[in-house]
Length: 310
Image (cartoon, rainbow, N blue to C red; front, side):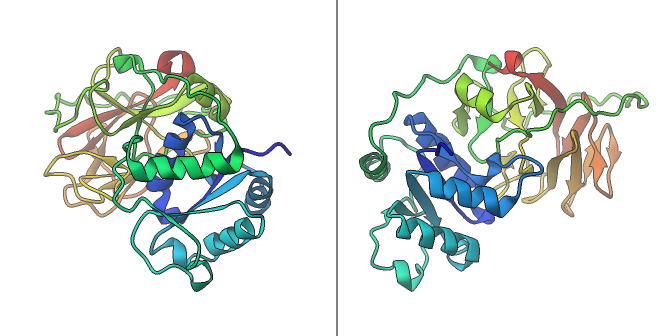
């Protein structure tokens, strides 16, 4: 099989960091594979091994979680055996003793700046291993029309068509407009990463993306695509979607895509999670155009086409 330039190995608990680093590497012109790209029905371990064996470089993200992961250790061992091992420290930790002597790139204090010396050294190491990369394509950044991917959001959209939704439901009670809690307009927020159209086409085969949006339908202030791995909403890290509102818990709720439907689960939040004005006590479907309310923030579930997001 034709391999990608880079295979990213990471602990599932570090998926936000894996997404951020993968997105930046793609902006550098590399093709990147990480396991969020696995499609439904594919054998997890077989696909990972195929992709790792076909890759030109394997970036292994070391953290206190990944050093105890048998999967990450196995992937690092195979990468080292193939001489494509590129270790990266994303959080201070004691490395597995077998890898202590390997030079590791330290991104434990990296803030996402692609001009940072530590990042440039990593890119140089990878380019030396895989060869020259294609020039990076300018990302779409046309304000609210752009395809906004928050840095900490798992952003790979589901591979299956999002066509199976509830066809009928009672009309929800309208909610009064809630104050927008420190949410920046799409074009101005710092925690953003825009995917190129090529990348969107590669990752989303069905042309539809589930999004949580803040603001009006025609010009949302913020847009959060919900991908294959889902997303946790909360007031602060380690939440994937961070909303600065004192009424929102640190870990407030989780949103997942299952069989073409968006499912919301409250994570024992202090003030509760609401769908169309109704507090939920169990995993609940969030139909298209329904409103998810956490604290004083209202997010609307919309299904967008690639044409709308490009």
